Image 1: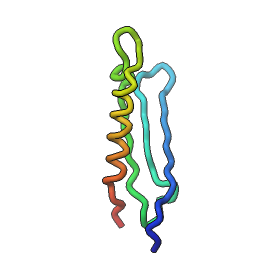
Image 2: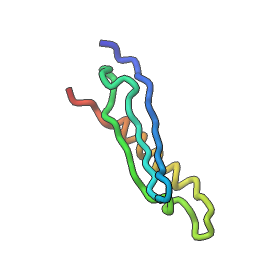
Image 3: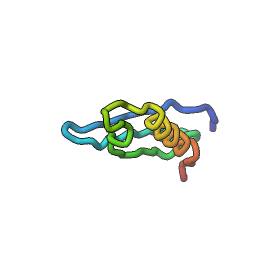
Image 4: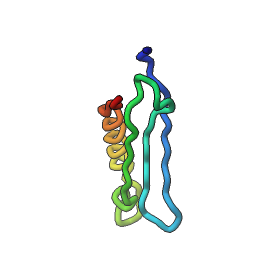
Length: 78
């Protein structure tokens, strides 16, 4: 099989009236030999804002980068 990278499907969800944000990363071709297991996190958006309501972008990106690292470290079990 080929070891070319497959595309990714990134999805995010923030239900109405909820503070719980869900972000997931999955392979666009789950059957590909280079596909990884999907990963996701669900976290309260309040963790990324100051008491004054200002987004602390660095905290958000740290969580996103951790999720990307998790995805890259997951190997699909066949």
